[in-house]
Image (cartoon, rainbow, N blue to C red; front, side):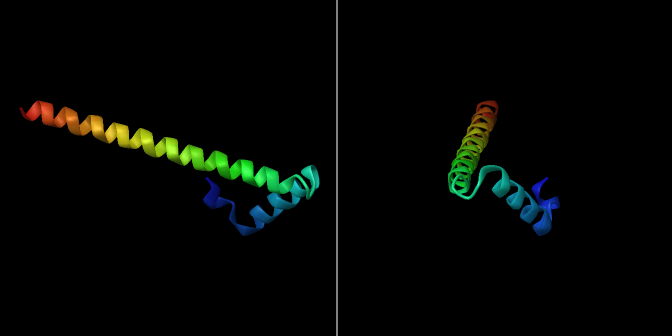
Length: 64
């Protein structure tokens, strides 16, 4: 989804965000967005690891 935006699209989004929130709020917004994205990636990774573990345990049980 984000890969279709491109550089010009990102520049437009940045300019609009800068106009709406102002230069003083922009670092706070960026920091909050980064933390949210990091938490999302961590949670997704944990879910995938849990799913892999349950799949492996189900396979080992069926082989016994």
